[in-house]
Image: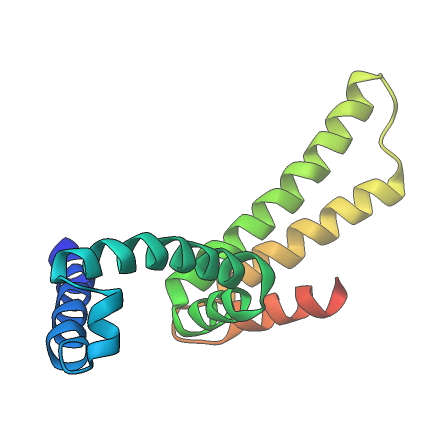
Amino acid sequence: MGWATYFAFIFAAVNTLTVTYFLAIERYPFLTTIFPSFLQYIVIIVSIGIPILVIVGYIHYKRTLAFKSEADVMVESNPYQRRNVVNNTISVEVAVKNMELLIKLTKQEKITEEEMNDLTKLYERYSEFLKERKFSDNNDMEFLKGRIRNS
């Protein structure tokens, strides 16, 4: 993984710097006045390029819909990722419901019939959902789409 990811980026950067300097900058005298040597070219480009790349990455991650779209595609295309999101969603909903009831019981309040019915419906809905779903079907995706529509 490290070879394919990180070495490829380093190799591509070195290749780009070498090619651009020796095929473009050396051939144009006005560019050689700005970048008199290959080492100075590397220092200037790296000192300007890295901050620009960090800013562009930050904007990509925080300020545009591109990262959200990538995450959506990952969930849609990877059934294991989708399953994790659905499992976490169910776990949080059940945990919150349990805490509500635990707080009520701790205050020595009675659980109403309506709360008991809601808890039973929640149990039945999720136990049925968990029995029916498979990695090969689209139940998890439909679950997520329903949650997105309702929020």
